[in-house]
Length: 195
Image (cartoon, rainbow, N blue to C red; front, side, top):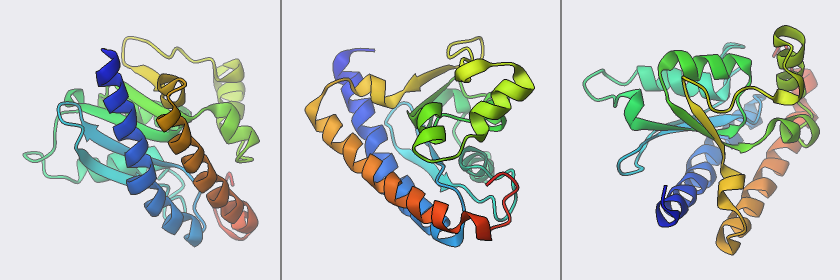
């Protein structure tokens, strides 16, 4: 990918997180859900197809990515783009459930903002790494980030040291710090199995 295309892509993905996913997540967290969200965009023009957020209070399987896929497949088939023509964006590196869901849905890519370590350390949600280790014997989240199904990309790594992107990254981090504090303060009161 050319540097100007990559710059346009990273800018658009950051904007979708900040302006489309964060507001949905804020409402979800206020209801007691976790801080995870996702979106699907068209590759050709980077238009937003759908954005969604975690809805585990409704169903413990409605992680941000799975809730997004549910909404995507509720779009009538004639209006829904093919997954090969789409970008999958997630706020946090997908857990094993969501990695599988993205794979089974046929996406050839996904981009994530926060890595597993941030999910564990900054958000105090250690389940992703623990499940990968306990169930799949994968230490430190070292799954194959490029494989025959898809390639994953760290959005923060792709932004590099671009000062405009760094400022927006910090703004998004602050928003998620606030969301995390809200979730952590209320998580003992919810019914999510792995809170």
